[in-house]
Image (cartoon, rainbow, N blue to C red; front, side):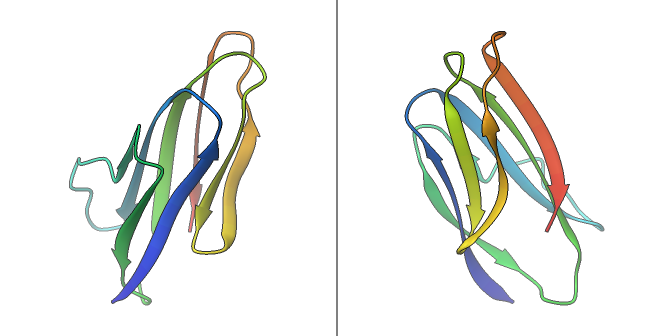
Length: 88
């Protein structure tokens, strides 16, 4: 297992970020506002996914990182919310 840092850069808003493996999802969010950083334990031989939900004012920019790698970035739209998913 490897400890990695999951973090978000965002000026304001609320967020939920979940990291899960192909075999299990605990149902517990790993990063919840107002916390901007947490440690996640990942097995190098497994594939992981992530999903996020962010609410913030229109045009608020954000970046999600796993260690020093940007895994998602964007801007909140006029509806005040953005969500997404990806593979780590």
